[in-house]
Every structure is written in C-alpha cells, then in structure tokens.
Image (cartoon, rainbow, N blue to C red; front, side):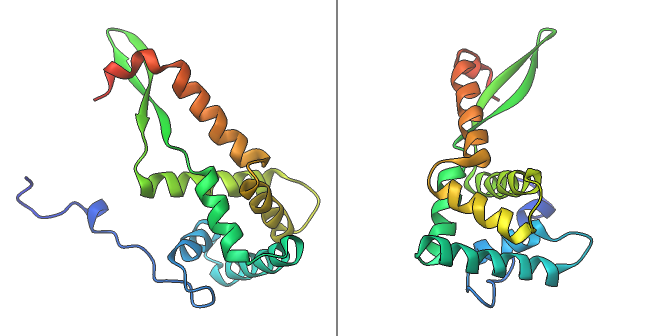
Length: 159
C-alpha cells in the first residue's frame, strides 16, 4: 500500500458527459480527436459524423457508435518481455479503460489514413464498418488477437 495516497494516474477522472449525446464515451472520443487545442472543431467533426451515421444506417447514431466501440475493443494485447537476453511478445489481458482507448485510437487512425474526403465522412464510414465487424480498425483488433494467440506459449512469462 502506498503511503502517499493514490498515484496521479489513479486520480485522473473521466471527462464529463458530452452535452449533446449525454455520453462519457463520446466526450472521451472528442478528446481523442482534439488536435492542437481545437475542441470545438473536434466536437463538430463528431456531431457531423453522427448525423452521417444516422442517415446512412437508419439507426440511432449512438447505438451504432457503442456497437462499434464494443466490436473494436481488444481483449488481449502483446507486451514485450525480456527474459534471458531474448525478447518475447507476451499476451496480456487489457483493462476495460485501456481497451476502449485503444479502440478509439484505432478508429481514428483508420479514419485518418483514408484519403480524399472530409474527416467527418471518413470517421462515419469507419464507425459504420466497425459496427459491422469490418474495416481497418476491426482488422487491427483481429491482427492483435491473432498475434496474441500465436504467442500464447509465452503467456507464462506474464508479470
């Protein structure tokens, strides 16, 4: 038990719920998109992409967004562990907060890697594909799980 109280990482609180969608998940997503301190622009991108999602899928945008985050979230990840001069990729379980953050990062990376359209459209397309278990972000999750499965023999090196 630490004598000085909680470490800074443990004290860090989640952002307040988004005013438009009343969701902490959306607020965290806006903060991930936030670039060079332009939060209003990030909020506009998310709002526009939610409108596009609702138009294309004929479903509630929040339902599609939540489904996408749930399908893209990884359960396992690989961590490098050095044992006796050799470095092993050890599969470890991912904590829920980190897995959600990874899913958001993968969605953003996949959307940013698409070319030629506004960010709101690219993000909406990637969220729709993620909710259908398709797209680059879901592929990243599957690749991570496949690598973890391949390195399962090193799981006993977990620390």
